[in-house]
Amino acid sequence: MIFACQKDSYIRSLKTTVTSCKTGSLKQVVDGRKVTLNGYEVTFEDTVLFPEGGGQPDDRGTANGIPVLRIFRNNGKAIHFLTSPLEVGESVELQLDWDRRYDHMQQHSGQHLITAVAEDEFSFHTTSWNLGDEVSTIELDAPSGIKQEDISKLEFIVNEKIRQCVPVNVRLYEPGSEELNGVRTRMKIPDGEGDTIRVVTIEGVDSNLCCGTHVSNLSHVQVIKLLYTEKGKQGKTNLFFVAGERVLKYLGRAVHREKKLTTLLKCGPEEHAAMAEKLNQSLKLANKNALSALRDLAVAEAKIFKLLEPRPKFYSYHRREGDNEFMTIFDNEVGDKGIILFLTTGDEKGVGQFLLSGPEDVVAEYGPKVCEVIEGKGFLKHGKYQGKANKLSKKARAEELIKDGLCNGIAL
Figure 1 (spheres, helix red, strand yellow):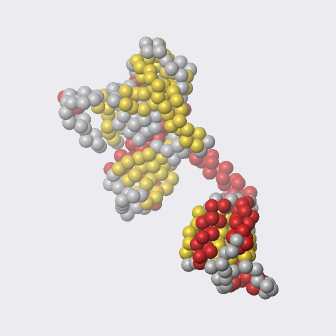
Figure 2 (spheres, rainbow, N blue to C red; figure 1 turned 60 degrees about the vertical axis):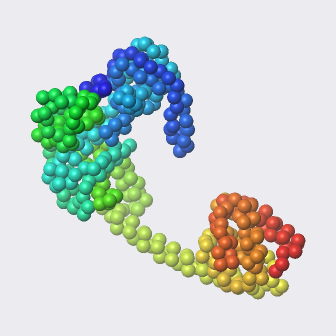
Figure 3 (cartoon, rainbow, N blue to C red; figure 1 turned 120 degrees about the vertical axis):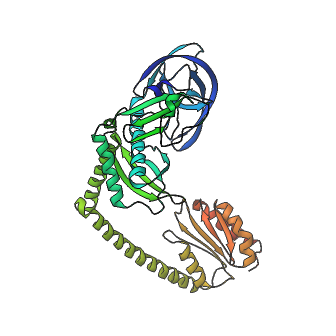
């Protein structure tokens, strides 16, 4: 079925009738958590709200003031998910979220334009695309990547087409019709009987099968900015772009970041990269010195322990800024398997790392018990039990567990 929104992408409202309403559920992510909403799946005689398809996300809007949270296709019908029911036969006015729709139209028509020019001028065939929330991606069959000069040329050509105000037309054809026989599209037209065929044509540039919503003239796209490319899967190259209002928003965010960096780095925008590189090198040197000092500290602390008289059978030590290497150096420097060492690093009240060493049978028995107490994950290797601790705040309980074992006759 061809919907009203596919016949005229600029229509913003539509009066229609409810044809079905049944209970349903919708999975969404709210504040980073997956939740399931219970509601109603509603169909209408026609709709102004585009269901997802052709790489384009679905619209948003309202039905008699009730928010439509999702629209998807099922057996040729557009299913509208609402949180409140509607009566079958009820007259309804559908209102479109125009800002979201127009943004999608700009990105989708921009993609058609980029795809056409990339193929015709550079022989880069589009294999898929994704309309993202802020940036969109076109997957191109370009195993060797795309040269920067080609990206610049591609960007110039597509924006020249926009400046020329090239018309964009949408036409509907019945399968097998004589009129369809004279149509040439980038994608092969399906043979035989079937649904109405929808062809989107950028005059003199491209003609392609598509179910999505598009601008009526390339001037409505406003501008296209090709951002960068990344190596994709199986010899493909991903081209990232923004079009229309997204270019202004992208520029606004870039200017905001630039101003913040100017304040933080205390230099002009043209010096940001050099200053960041200088700071990065300084940080690497500082980290290297800190790591060396930490290693020396591990050796020194172990030597201090070895001076204890008499040496304890069990010793617990925590170093907040330490790491796995710190604990390993400490343990190796002590070098006495007759002593039970319980070493920890990280946040004393939160997440950290731990190492338990000593007699192999004791470590094998108490390692998993200690790990359970501090709610961690660990493993036994080379006579040591070590891993991640999620609750170092329970370290004292783990120490009591080992001490109780000593009192009850742990053989050392």
